Length: 416
Image (cartoon, rainbow, N blue to C red):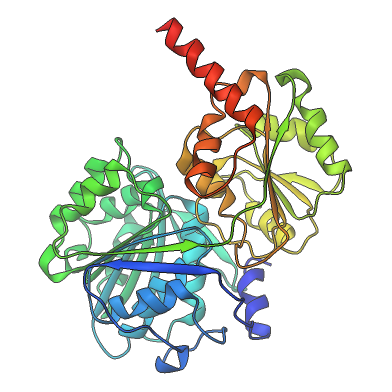
């Protein structure tokens, strides 16, 4: 069950969905990758998505890139596939930095499925003090083990292989630097950069970049949005090409008024009673809220990132055994779902970046999906985050929402 997503893909090659995308390049240009048949590594897809067509050649040519593309556009394979391809018969050390445990496990599975026998893959996550190793169990499932000093030495030894890929959270990767030859990194990938790089982690990235040979390392950065902290890190990289992939398809979004916080749950129940399509991902501010709401619905569950069995919950959601999955923003960080029909923002996002990653759980190459944002009177001061994103992306914001935002701003200015 652990690998239900990839195992399902392997059974039958999927036809590539029709994309409504466009892209632009600022910097060095390379010809597109027209077919996966041009590579030796085999993948269970007929042809590459646009992001993969554009980005993979930059890896093969070792051209530094920063890629801004919406979540669900095929970014993971855009860096995993060329790393595996270039590791054939040559020395390679790829380090992939991702936000947390779910994405470490996901990227580990992707690399494991397409890798050749000579490539060593290591997955780690943690805060640098308490770290865990992700590896394959006896039955092919993924298991995690706490990293002690003895295991740290074992990991360091495995990272001395000729061809290896290290996937991990920034602090856990940084903690391995004193034990392994991580200074010999040939390819550094920063995924979900807008979630990874913030005031608290800028120093961690500065430390990582300071111990690798920048001039000899191919550096790539993937982000759904851009912020000043991502720009600050990227400015330290010489000769970097900027690639932007955008969707031309507008999302179907609806604001739903939930009156007050105390009875907001009634609006959620009404949306579902009106015939919302499932599987549905519902974002809440904390697990306690998710637990209370889950008790009101059948075929529902709460995702808990650090709890045993979280992988089984995701598999049940992917198999449609679970119709409604409640989660915090921990599940907005790059996890792939190909069958989600609806996303509900029960609790409003705090930033545009959070909103972008939440709605990114929907595959924009499919049609008929919908996003709902439930707001109450307590949310008037924060609803502008959603409205601003919609306006920037060509959506018409309802007039009553615009009036709410204007009144809230005037009230804030008077208090100031």
